[in-house]
Image: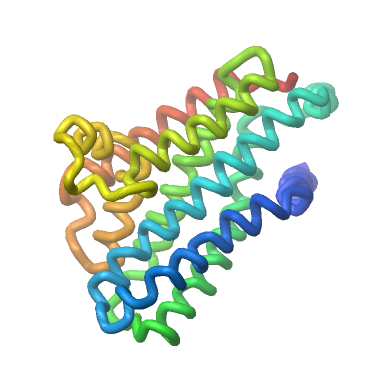
Length: 238
């Protein structure tokens, strides 16, 4: 059953090549655009890695998995699963396992690019802790997406909501424009959004800083647990 669900999620992901191209290709494009700023600036390269991983994670979790789930609700496909022994948490866990493998493949390719093109050093990295934080960040965004995809009774509206939330998080997370010179209220809001939790925690662990600095790591754990519970409670098969 578990392997069957993982295969289903992988096939769903493969049917949306545009999302794959956008999510996995956009960071490389942005890296090319920023190349003049990054070459010879190892601190900036290290600091930017968490941003690129977070953007890709958000695409995989919000514009792909959550959007696809809302769509399968809309076409009544999930109604068949209700007739089986599949539980909501089975569906959610296998969705995370199937897509997180894609994210880790992207990270390997992206880090290799940073090493060979921008001379990023891999010395003194805590790979185990970094992998755990990546998995936690992915789970957080996946569960946020699943909650949104199931939040509304109308599946079509849920599908639209995932895209709205994606762009709101992009805007609020400072991806669209830097927030350094933004009003204090904007910076406060940004610090309280999931993208900032992920970016700061990934940056801290990658650069060997205190992972518990600020509220970000703890906030990410709390958000993951909270949205995990909500995703199961509000899960809809149709």
